Image 1 (spheres, one colour):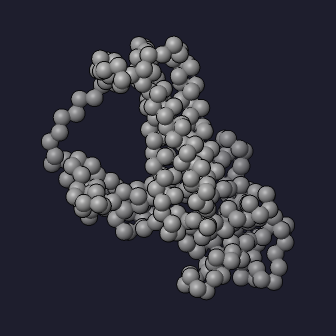
Image 2 (tube, rainbow, N blue to C red; image 1 turned 180 degrees about the horizontal axis):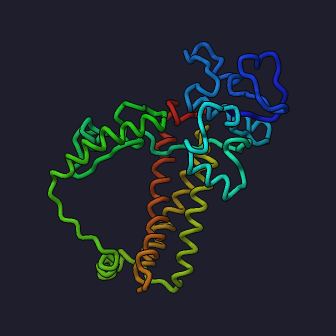
Length: 302
């Protein structure tokens, strides 16, 4: 269950809190109590995008943390059921999933259902309806219609099993030659025309530091402006700022490929990540600003 600081009142009778001084609040969300949207108010079991917005609104309203609590669960051993998160909470934060209040914050799934996919897992161009040779998508990012704009782990896993198997069988029948070598790639890129690379006086460490700075700033912008609740002005601002980091990421990559480095794999991977993440972030923010219809994880508040 999800809790915040406060004492329960009579309205919370169907949603009791097991901890004094903390109360459940998701069921009180105006969005879940709006009869016009046709949603059945099931508290924390309501559609996940609405639960996420209720949590986000509470955090913004109070400036206080919101917690998830599993101590009331007695018929399931949560430690055995969720071993990875249990280990992480204990080792990093000294928290026990089975007994402690765990601070939480909602996060966005930026590519949920964002790739147009045929029934066989092939990606296709919505504008032309034609499939894209050699490109397949399975799971959360695939727009198959199974989980729509609202990701659930169970449906994504189900898609991974069903479409993963069919796509795997389909791909196994396609004959392709794969010969990728990072060091060879660097050598080829260094031999390309000057406009594809950029000479630099920066050291390897300076470029890595710049790549990490780009990644950190992209993460901050996406969390600030392209999160659970979005506004048009925030998305326009994010797109503008992210384009600057996209340019920097591309420039860092072009400078990096001119440097001979014994750790070429790790070095280029870091630069490539900054280049690719910033590029994807721009596309996500821009397309979100163009989509004025709220659906699932994409919610425009104005």
